Image (cartoon, rainbow, N blue to C red; front, top):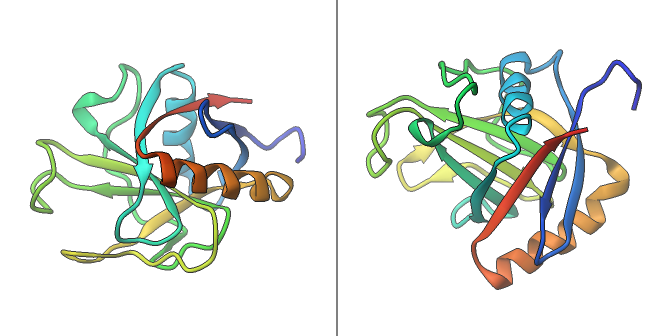
Length: 163
């Protein structure tokens, strides 16, 4: 990773998750900025293994619950896909009222895809995520094992920090 690239790390204590990720500032500038802002807060967030999308650790983030200073403005499609690859870190943004069953306000979701086979077919239809970061190749196997442990253990607290 060059010195000009920004990076973040996802951590989780029980599973030992420690995944460094390169931000894709050029391909997904608004989405990468969202992750960078979030990583600068020092907060942890509830996460769980996804139900519908396959090999994904999902971190749902209702906009009203985000720490002060995190930009909650709309996130446009950028570097978007409905079929994320192993190592992709995606940001989904859903406008207030666009989907039944979500809390009030806009809604963000960080998806950490740890294996092949991700597909974003939800009960309410297909969505896309903006691929905003990628897990460093040398961290992917350990991240896969840790997230599979989270899948077995249930919900967790996901840390995100700047590197």
